[in-house]
Length: 77
Image 1: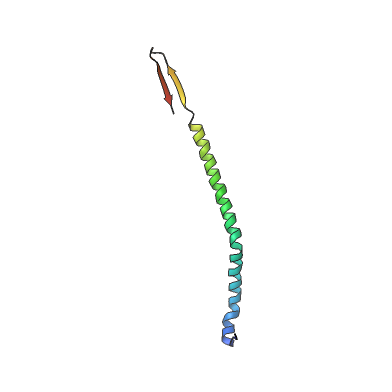
Image 2: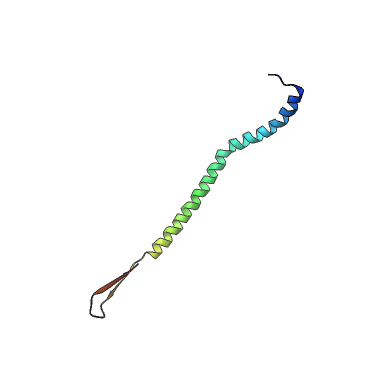
């Protein structure tokens, strides 16, 4: 395949653009992995905080009201 002079004027500047695209494609898995790791850390932190809130709020209160002579147990959650 031979290039004419006008084709060379277009092809040579495009090699820099193609080089940049190739570089981005080679680095994309690394960037994707880093983004996935960061998102996983944020999600685990949200789950941990949510679990702490649930554990703190779920302590049931059990009272035995025997003052009135009747047997009534009040369980509050």
